[in-house]
Image (cartoon, rainbow, N blue to C red; front, side, top):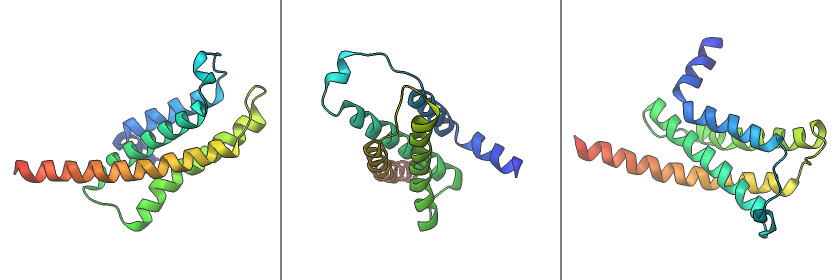
Length: 135
């Protein structure tokens, strides 16, 4: 089991890095900036973080498995980031004193992950076409 986890980490380095960055950014106290005055800036940030995470996860998974994922893998590629998002929201609510869990953040993360699946799909189609044309 440990070797499978180690192999997964080695084959998904960008995903692992993004997961660590997202956990850090989600649990530390952000400084007050003028950006917080922009309406829904926080939600756009959530969309971008989870869209990027899921898109990178899709591409790394495609590269590891050398092809398009099954429906089961697609579901896992979507649900894993969304589940992590839910854990982070719970950690913010119950394990920090200056952050709070927010259902709208979870919703923004889920939408971002869905957009990331679409972006990852398009990126891998383009990458597959690039590989095909080089032969």
